[in-house]
Amino acid sequence: MAFILSIAFAALLISTSAPKVVFTYCPTEPIETIDETLEFDMYVANSDIINFFVSVTQNEELYSRFYIDTDFNPAPNVFELPKAREVVSLGYGVERENYGDKFSVFIEIIDEEYKYGNDTCEVSFSES
Image (cartoon, rainbow, N blue to C red; front, side, top):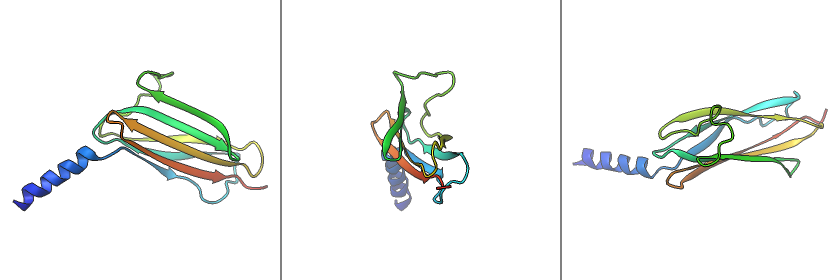
């Protein structure tokens, strides 16, 4: 009986889980190079991703933002939205324009059940 209950509980957790975004490389120390690629993983639950959104601020001002969804994908042959139960690893590059630049990169994914996951990486470039 306990075995059946644990299987039912595990199935409930999987069916109600939301997708996740996790930065796997987000430097905490100031970056010494001119550019850096931040790395992140997207963990998709039981529903396909329908929206991928990125917002970037530079020195606390909006620098860039874009989204890809099932209705609008500017590069369908280059980037396909992740499917259910996939883990996708990607990177996002930041490049300093001035010494001391600070960037905040926010990434969010939404699935077919409108569950979402997001993460933010904040990095700074060295002052010299």
